[in-house]
Image (cartoon, rainbow, N blue to C red; front, side, top):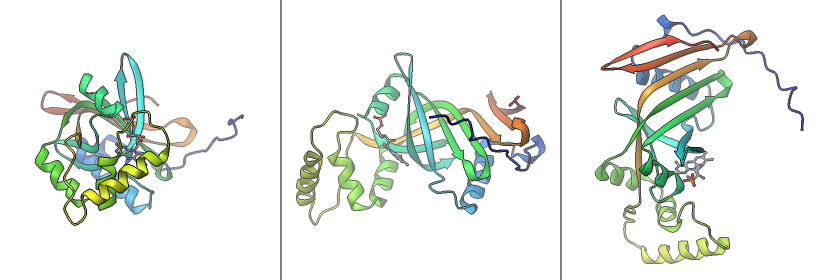
Length: 210
Ligand SMILES: Cc1cc2nc3c(=O)[nH]c(=O)nc-3n(C[C@H](O)[C@H](O)[C@H](O)COP(=O)(O)O)c2cc1C
């Protein structure tokens, strides 16, 4: 398959140092709002990269909170990514908002969010997702799909008429950024890249070559 014909010219407006907020989280909120306004499907979908034995690994998750403390997604701590993050508590996040010709990249250390905060979020999830979190031994090898369905049905019965508690192995991971890059596609591959770099308590913003 030759994919060389996919060669779009990006005609989007530029990104200058004086356009962006001094804090990358504020800038993220600004771009996230623009992605929502543009109708981007699942604008909170983000690729999370981890390292395991020096090998990169990556998968998509959904961001659930972005605030001054960092960027949070929820997952199973016993999954491949959960184990990798326990061993090497560092991650990279990559978001593509393609209709806007925008990419955001984040690198940072990770921490688990408080159990109370995770409980509150878990309680807001649809019941089916709550039972799903109990059902799936994420990232382990399983046989037939019917195993999962049988386990789900058994849990449905077990929790009938009662609130589903959060499994201890399921919760939130917060990425605390040390670097955040905002990338804006521009004509002739001369894209704009502005990178925020943590220097003590300050954020230094620099333009990178595309
Ligand atoms: C759009 C999308 C959203 C997803 N959201 C999540 C999520 O929020 N949390 C999660 O654990 N997995 C999510 N997944 C599944 C992961 O991509 C992945 O298959 C799973 O977490 C197992 O990854 P691991 O084996 O590397 O731990 C999502 C997948 C897609 C395509």
